[in-house]
Amino acid sequence: MKRIIFLLSSFLLLAAVACAAPPGGQSIGLREVIAALERPFTPDAPAEEKIVDFQADFFQESHISSLDRSQRGEGRVFIKFDEGSTGRVPKVLFRWEYDRPTRQEFVSNGEKLWVYLPENRQVILSNIEQTTLARQNNPMTFLTGLSNLSRDFFIRWADPNEDVAGNYILQLEPNRTTTMFHKMLVVVDRNAVLARHGGTPDNSIFPILSTSVYDTYNNLTIIEFSNIRTNRGMFLQSFDFMIPPNVDVVRPTGESMGF
Image (cartoon, rainbow, N blue to C red; front, top):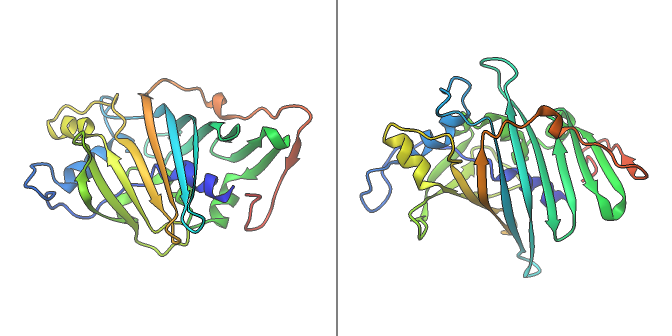
């Protein structure tokens, strides 16, 4: 359960501090890639650039190194950035719906976090602030900093630095020591980078295509996104979880927070 909570948010981690061009003499440098990643989420971004919500299908594969065992999952994700007022750091509202390997839901309205386990007839209800404080090194805590994550991470070109479709691959490492993850590879949509580099940014293109997260034990989790749609006008009420009847509600306290 700890791994799933960590992974549902890790795809949102990206940053950079360098601006050298990638190997091979390409004209797009790291600064251009980072601009395409961060700019859509800044409070002062113009309408044609801004991304306020997105939804997608996702595929997840996790590999446990010590057991040499893999597990696959898939489902749908919905994310909304609620600024509340101009210039305010946005709250992040999310809903992850897993169909495989078992049905599960992770829902947050920016204040509460619900983890619904239908097979167990159980809902784990936590305060999102408590969860953040209990897990200060959890990548979930960086969801509110998409517009300025370059201060928290060191980024370099991965090897290889492009996939077969020409999308850019970055390697991210946290500036602060964390037990949750060692490094992360982010595949950035080439179209988003080229559009911004060419002066015609397109907020219909979500810049992140996939992430590969390695923890300190060399376990690996890959999340790939497809059928991505941005700025669909999601309602805030969509992120209030309605607790089904006849289920147990657990309200954990302490560092474990129940997951």
